[in-house]
Length: 289
Image 1 (cartoon, helix red, strand yellow):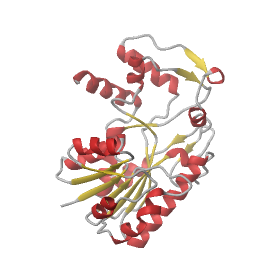
Image 2 (spheres, one colour):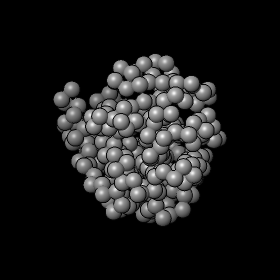
Image 3 (cartoon, one colour):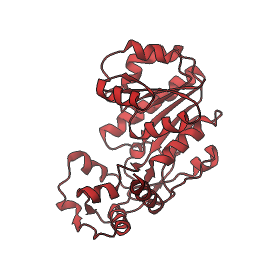
Image 4 (cartoon, one colour):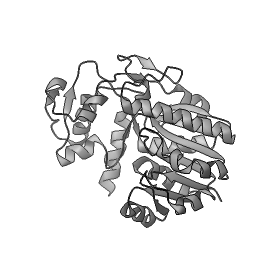
């Protein structure tokens, strides 16, 4: 039986796990706390604790059965998974490695297009740490001689994490920074892309996982309001917005991220190629709950 071990079974990785579990896969995932591991187990998966600082013998035992490993844990000064479990990963019966990264590794392109051939010129410390981690995982895959795919994710949204949810709970803002655009990706398209990568074992490399239409963030919020039939929140100039340092850092990078390799090499066709498609689906799913 195929066995997916996921370091960090969070929002995106859970959708991937659910997709594979429906095909009969065995799933093991980690959370930072015992409560998080219990929540994983409540979904019918095997939940284990990995807080990034301490080894867990249960993780070692599970890796000894893992055929596929997905990493969805952010790095710090180094990669915590490799620090604690590299020897176990070298010994595991691996057929595939996947790493969830971010398009933040490209840094700022002043609104220009960038694809996977562009240099990873991250401007933030977090982005530079991601570049180092990507290289480390690709190196491990080369050493193990298993397909290794790095998925650079755009801004993730879906049910429970979308402008529609924020409008409903009163936390949505329309922040305007002239010329600023972002790519996005629906969580279900992330799951479908990773599944396609697993099914394309000849493919090793980096893939941008983004929608087809980079757009100004205020336009996305306005469309979500239109779907809900409510007035959009007033526009707020970026200079006047009360943003956290991390939120501000996202606005320091302005780029349009191309995704042609996703189509050409993995054969993916996005279910939600624009934010409009995705938000309509989010609303439909929320209304069914």
